Length: 596
Image (cartoon, rainbow, N blue to C red):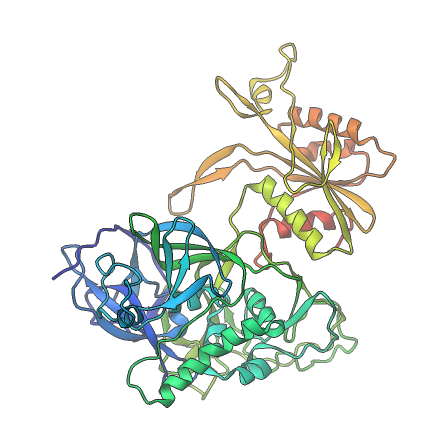
């Protein structure tokens, strides 16, 4: 009997095409369920995941039959549950409800369950079979169950939790599933630190193939036994399963890798009268709290000075020079062949991963002088397919695919993002950034987490100004207009008092490149300036707020009137930033001679 698809579909497009792993061509297939992990005997460094598909029929219903196919484990971030595929290409996605949940990762506050276990114990199933029917009434795939404040439950499939919450790169998860922990730790994840440890700071140097976002999990795995046990259990379960010669895939248990309160944002289906939720796609998760993490990279060029010897060194020697920055329209991804060592490589992005709440403080390690310079590289050969395994062989025409999710934080608006970035800098550089405060007219500087804006004074009726200038001090017009505010913040860095001024923006709606309407806001440059102790900040702030109104927020017109060094700055993002506006704040500070 066909299954009715209650949810609608939305068109999406992914660049990858699976060279194998999908059911019969010419028909549409919905990814329905992840069904365990298999070893890959063709390309041994690339485990496969068994994925269940249902056919999307012309009637809009789903087939009652389920078809199982193997997909590269590294490709699960692309082959999401709910995505619709045809001829190896993704065409659409099922529209699911999205919700953020407060949970607790502390042991005892969650449990592992399955339909098989519930049946064995005579308990209710993890979720009603009718809301999301699986092929087997006693399905053996493990699920995480969290208690919710509503009295309901959050159910997360373990393979989905592993794919989205165990680091940001598919490479990290491939390594954890393929090699024993001793080899992961000594050869494949951590590069030699080559410098002493420090109290109250965790230092991690990442291997070449990993991405920056992997560092939080790996730092905990290095310094906390609880996380180490969680990550080493992945390979141990797979290996123990195959030593038993079972024909079934390995149904692995995946535990939260840190303890304490956490947030999970997911897409899925409500049940139990809206009290419980089946999470089919994890969209984001919070970071664990803890000491700052110092992140380095193998053969990094992140040094203040170059090596004294200008001759070619050994860093990155033998690596191909060609990395495809612009992806072709279609990328054929395979797990049947390992990549050529000298072939070109490319980066493929999984859906963004939202870092919920306060991000973990991560600081780049910078050497005073580089120990090595770049070695002789080779010209990357062309490739017709791409693979995520270990380099092996020659002349197969297979390049390396680096697949990872970009961590993002939800923006709270440019003004608030800048304030959050200042607080982040204080946590990241406590010895240099000794204070972050905001200025108030009545109470002077205050250091509370929630900032107060200084309201602009509306123009008096007698003021001779144009209508657009007269309206500018208002964030919202109408019968009961709201006055616009400004944040005047002070960062005390190395004893210097650096001020940042940000204007409150009006909300706007803009269309993206595909014509979709999105929420946006006005665009203003920020102002950074330095004042000395003899400057009367009250008088200066009053002058600034009065003058900014007349130029409608174009602060560049006021630079010559500032009492000290002052510059404007733009709010340009960077791929390396840990949170919104981190790059913009660092750029602003460099304009007054402060480098963090």
